[in-house]
Image 1 (tube, one colour):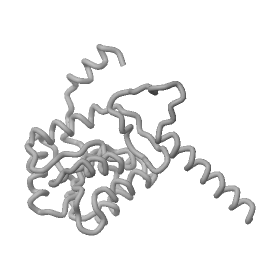
Image 2: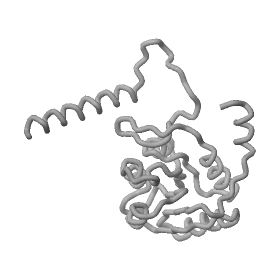
Image 3: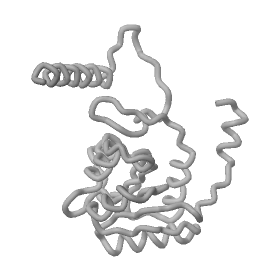
Image 4: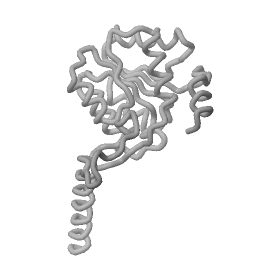
Length: 194
């Protein structure tokens, strides 16, 4: 991207009043805080849901522009919901920007959010400005969407990187090769049994 394109993208004005937003959180207090933060910036939430099961039903039928999902919910948690959605093949929802929220953020929680396919993790309690900053961040995010091995989501690397050595084998490439080999073996076995 040229310098001019980057500057224009950074200064772009986003009109989010028509965006279809879904918030999934089983805590009534957290839900209300999130809704108030979004409404303060003119973002209307179309779907305010208390469970991943409700979210799945709607996501299978209605397109959404932004998802905000709590990590820790009873039943199916936020990570499982995001993982399911990213692997569901439901277009365009499988590629929707996803912000996850969490009250107790440990390093492992950040890794779980990243590895399930979420675009970003926001910690609670958060300010309205922090939510808006992250919404705008994912709106500007131009990382490619990847499907490699058991991962499906935005490229986990925030900055482009180059191999450190000429023959470096990245962990993702090893997982992808293993996944493709297992898939080919399964297909051969299926053809042989037919």
